Image 1 (spheres, rainbow, N blue to C red):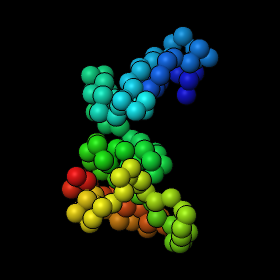
Image 2 (tube, one colour):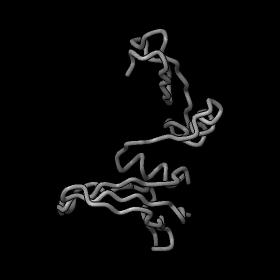
Image 3 (cartoon, rainbow, N blue to C red):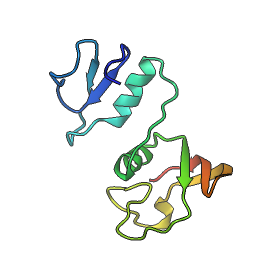
Image 4 (tube, rainbow, N blue to C red):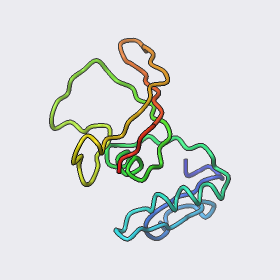
Length: 128
């Protein structure tokens, strides 16, 4: 990816000196030393990026959902039960105080891919 001419690296800190000169850098730290996700979306909008696909773990998924920055979810579900302490789809820093704090979605598509399910869902209610 870093060999491409059209690369933007976004960090909460400084530029990595190992990056090639053509790699653009944008530092967007928030008050906690993490990337300010709202500022990132604004910066991408200024660059006319109007569709962003994010493959992430529970922490980033939770942060994006908590900030209200997710329109759709594309989930793949395997017919397996992993159980605790497996990571869920989204980790919210403050946890889920009540069901009123949940993220609600509307299922748009559900399809079988072999034994797995592919679920496309639209976020209809964001966490408070």
